[in-house]
Image (cartoon, rainbow, N blue to C red; front, side, top):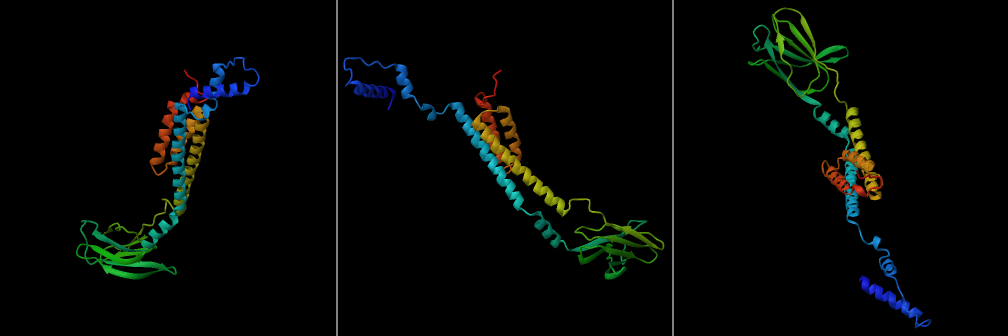
Length: 274
């Protein structure tokens, strides 16, 4: 029903009510009253263009923040301990191999005795022995990843005893020099890298920051709906980018929402037009 039909209907109702009282009195209805009556409640139906931009911006920021919260929850569910434990189990037995060189010439030495020892009851026990091949190489198979001793000896050369922990990598070359006696080498290194506890703490911290950023983003989406504080809402939306919802999808949606906020910034109550 258009505005003219509404006016006619209003006039008809008024005439019908007054027809029994004063038929001769002319009914005068002001246009302003008709307009006020017919347009009453229109603001609940019509959506201003800029308010529509704010609604869309709020929706984009909200969806991007929700994706960030989901990402944080997925990070919390992943258990680094299981992954690292599986890796340690796979590397619990390794092959140890390397080369023996003559110190003066740097050439490989064939027939050098290489012993693999392990400490038991304050004494070293030999568990495997091999001799270097024509290329100076030696190899021990299925060695447990615990502290061992490699003893390399040959006639007329000093003996080298190296304390080490087997890893999936080639051992540093042994260099033998002519002489007597024993040279001690300690290849055990303190673990200054990331421990299991550090890995779990880092993963948990990142997940919590992700979830927190997502919650701040939801607050920003609510602030866009209220359209009260422009700069504060933009700052909250910017922090929500750290939610990293599914890597790029969440931040992209939030950035789009921030762009729409800029276009409709004059609708915020505290925004001052320069």
